[in-house]
Each structure stands twice: as structure tokens, then as C-alpha cells.
Image (cartoon, rainbow, N blue to C red; front, side, top):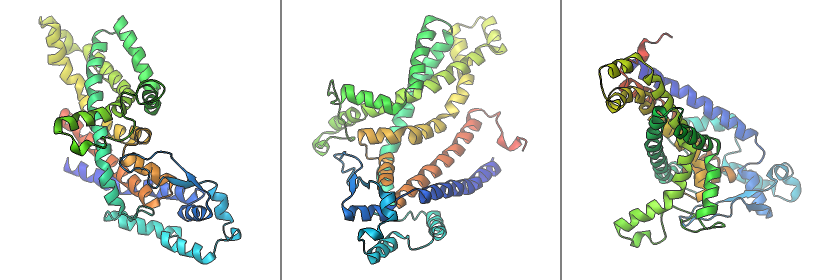
Length: 365
């Protein structure tokens, strides 16, 4: 097993390098950049990227240029001092060729030196560590609730396969699978967060402005009040696939010979279901917990954080993309990719712990 772990860890390096290289090329090929954005601001052509300023201070740099690509191509002819242009290029590091910038970035990232934000004037790693707890909290709450809902629902659907209960719950699962989480989040905002109907829940942030003056029970309730809508949107968008996986896993086990043997011995239905079928059917579901957390953390949270103005990594990366803040953009991508690759290894190891029959070292290569 140690040899397998070592091989997987070694594969992280070229995979991470390839992902960073591909995204670096894409960003460099895209029109506009921090220099053009700054020049556009100097000319007064910058526009608001978002009209959102959260109570936590999110959005203080949420401005972007409109038409930056065309302006960048003709900036010298529009009265911009060439010395100022060169000074800005040196400030942002664009006085060097792209390959030198990429090599410098990779060398720095190898020692977790993610650079300094162009517009916030703070180390990128410090910014990310400040925002990371918010994203991890949302991911953990969502993953736990998805499992608590999907496993009982999947078991009930398997036991009642083909009944009206199975049909109606399948319709709910299809709706949850078909509607993206961010659309459901917008619906929740309209219905319950001061949209066209009720105003029962807050729209922004994870805590109230008076959180510091509240007692601990009140702080807990205030926190749960704020995360109710974001977590609900993420859960609705994520429970469907796990519920169907649980159902299909149980159906596969129910049709196996050992289940017929247990029933022939006179064991009760509940004893057969939870004493024999459950532990075998749950192997793939339990082992997939790290992978499910990856999906919730990376795939679903970005737009949810933007919609609810949650001060996490998703919103940080969004604002960095809007502002062409390349150090924050690549730093966020680097951390997301690294965590994802490492959690994939944890997922594989979880399979071996849950089911000792799995041995990756004996696989044929």
C-alpha cells in the first residue's frame, strides 16, 4: 500500500503542472489584463462588475474594465504616457516573457509562495487561508446533510422498488438532478430572502453585524439562520445522484444469493436488511465520502458564494477573475487542484479500509 500511495503522490506533480500550464496559457491568450484594466480605470472607463458589497467587506475590489481588449491595443494612441505603461507592466511583472513568468510562478508555488494580490496588497496565501474556513464549512455541512438525506431515501426506494412511493420520489430526484444549485439558490432568494415574497432569511454573509454582542446560543442560531438558504441550495443540487447510487447498490445486494440464504434461515426482514445487506451495500457509498466532499467544495460552491455574498474561496476567485488579479486566480486554482488531487487519493484509500478485498497493489498494470 505504501508503494501505491507513493506512486499516486508522484503523479500529483505532473498532473498539477499540466493543469497550471493549461490555465496559464488560456489566461495569457484571453484579451485584456491587469495593465489594460488599470489603464481603463485611469481613463475612467472601468465599470462595476458587481453591485454587491457584503457586510464582511467582500467586494471592495469588485471593478472591471469594459472593452479592455480594444483599449489595450490602442492605449498608446489614446494619450497614455508610454513611461506609465512600462511602469505598470513592471509593477505587474509583464516586463518579462510569458515563459519566464510561468517558470517563476511554478518555482514559487513549489514552496507555497503564492505571491501578492495586485489590488488587495496582501499575500495570496493569507487571503486564501482567511476565506478557506467558509468554503470548508459549507462543503462539510452540505456533504453531511446530503448523506443523511440520500441514504435513508435510497434504502426506502430500494425496499419499495416499483411502488408509488418509488415513482414519486424518483420524480423529486429527477427535479433535484435537473435543476442546477445556483438556479434553486436564486429561487430561494426570491421567495425567502427579500425578493418578491417573504423576507425570512438574510441575503448576505454568514453572521449578523451584531454577532460579537450575542451570547453563544444566539450566535449558533444566527449562524444557522444565515447558512440555511446556501446549504439548502447545495443539498437540493447534490442529493439526487447519491440517492440513486444508494438505491441501485441495495438492489444489487438484494438479488444476491446470501440474501436468499438469510431469508431461508427465518431471519426477519429488518435483520436481513440492516444486518446483512446494509453493510455490503454501503461500501461504495461510504467510501465515496471524500469524493462527494470534493464535488460539493469545488463544483457547487462558487456560484452559491457569489449569490449569497459569502466570503469564501469561490467569491474570492470570482472577484479575482473579474479584476484580472492573476496571483489570486492562479493561487486559488492551485489550492483547489492540490486539495482535489489529494482527496482523490484519500478516496481510494477509503475504499481499501471499507472493503479489505480491494488491493490496488495487485491490480494488473
